[in-house]
Structures are given as C-alpha cells and as structure tokens.
Length: 99
Image (tube, rainbow, N blue to C red; front, side, top):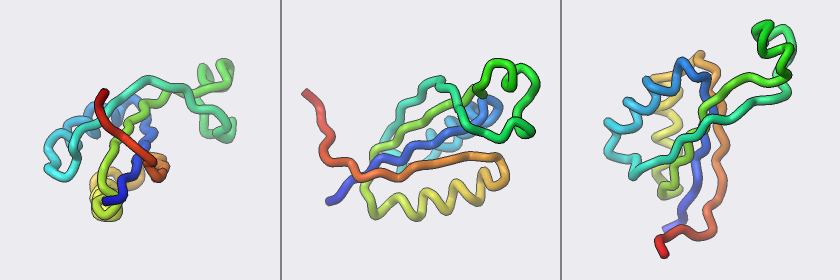
C-alpha cells in the first residue's frame, strides 16, 4: 500500500484544538508536532511583532498514513478547520519503519 506524509502548518492558537481533533480520529495512526517559523506572508497579514521579526510562529504536524486515507482526512480537516488558515503539504513517502 502506498503511503504519504501529510504536513500541516497551523497558527499556535489552533494547535491544541487540532491535536485533540487528531487524537480522536481512528484514521490517524499517530503524528509528530514541532514549533516552526513561517516566512513569506504578506506584511499586511502580520502582527507588528511578526513584521519586525520577519516571521510568524507556526506549529508543524506530520502524519504518515496510507495514501487512500488522505483525501477523506483532508476533507474532514476542511470541515473542522475551514477558515483557520491551516496550510498543508501532501507528499509521497518512499519508506518508513522502525530500526
């Protein structure tokens, strides 16, 4: 079965609700989170402190899952978090496992 990596980028105020939502889903086998900085947003969309720093704080969530599951999960994310500014990447995952 072909796997993929779904990467989500969310504002810090959305991180906890998103984590709770993901933990409740049976189609999410597990995930990792980390704090990252976003760059490249239009200056008018940034708070003053973000304009000065040149970056905005974001949480990055990575979910490895079967490719066939991704479309339904993305649609559920759109319903649950539409309008939140959540950004995502869906990437092929060549290999994953434990050593």
